[in-house]
Length: 202
Image 1 (cartoon, rainbow, N blue to C red):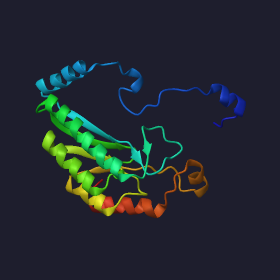
Image 2: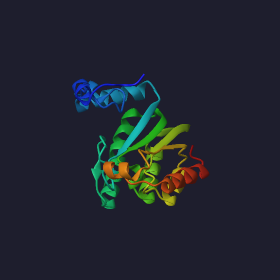
Image 3: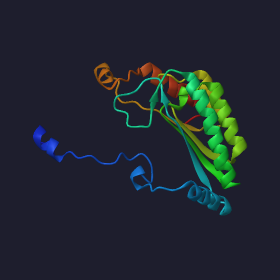
Image 4: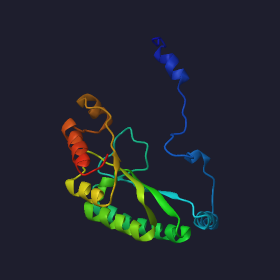
């Protein structure tokens, strides 16, 4: 069945809705004061529930024009280094609150987590191992940008037992890439897939 709607009809049907990137979505969040957060985290620890950890690295070297994520475009790597220290400090507070609750999943998103150089990634991975009780078979995943991922970063991920990665491929057409401000080649993409698979990432 083909669509025969006119551009005017399509425009009339268009409507804005929440961007669904997590559950619950941000539209369902309520204001929780610091005391409430501390109580909820303590309750998780008391019940010995398993937990998942998501770490957001908001930096990208350049902004893709379709992006709706919480992103800070910058080429200043030192911003990432300082951010890692802040992230470790926050993780320490959460880790103390949840006591020995076991982490069964760790996920890194962004932005581009591979904005962080390999030494910063290693520092962050080591801190998480120290702060939390992480299950030996915990699922570890990360989003990577094929345009900027390095061999050293892949080695750091493999050493930290990351098992899976995701990466975006919008289009390989140069015309589309010009329009969305994201230039990514087949060669870059294939290199990342092969390199990651070669080091055990699925």
